[in-house]
Length: 246
Ligand code: PGA
Image 1 (cartoon, rainbow, N blue to C red):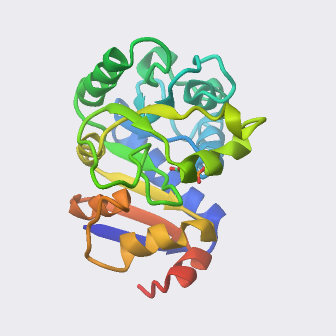
Image 2 (cartoon, protein in one colour):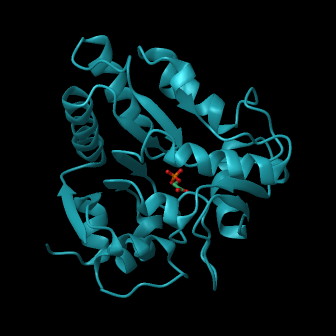
């Protein structure tokens, strides 16, 4: 079941989710967080950094697992998701990096997928899984398609995703065309899932998620409707574009 939270602004959405995470960590210091990359969570991560530096939250016992990683670039590459997590969050908070996991983009893809799958369940599932959403409704790198995968696997990125992510690379040709990702079952296994979306490019994807009861593999986010504790945080601008009235 989806709980939709409509906020005044994108900044307020980020504050809402940062508060949820701080509350969880304060209640359960050794919790497990499922984390996401992309442009959307960056200001939310800044708020977590501020809270940590102000002594309001302690990440020293927290464990994390990330949703996905590009294939073919190492964790030292400035567009890898390991690098993203280090520079946007881990380097600035008191987390033990040994307790953070981002899948391997280099090496044997099948072995890397098996490792990611094991990490999803190691020591228990995530207490909270943070999510963004693609313009095409993808969740992590589970792309809109006739079929979806339940477990960790290698995904061929769609043109829509490559175009959307090209802004982070010098040239569109530099965007990796494959990625390793948690499957839909891995994501739905988390105790709570929290999705942040902003921007009118997400209108169709969010409409499919919050305006009907339909589930379709062509908008993978709609599978979140089967989760008992899914929260979708959108700002007023996106809610209005979608026609969501509450
Ligand atoms: P974005 O990406 O936050 O950069 O829009 C979200 C996603 O593709 O899941």
